[in-house]
Image (cartoon, rainbow, N blue to C red; front, top):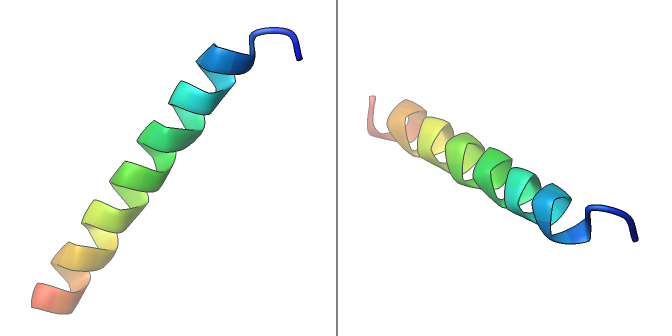
Amino acid sequence: TKGGPIMIAVNDTRLALGFGMAKKIMVE
């Protein structure tokens, strides 16, 4: 796929951010 690695990196970042937000919400 065109720009595969870049899209994967973007998706990984989104997942990491989403996981971090969920973690914060759970802590609070």
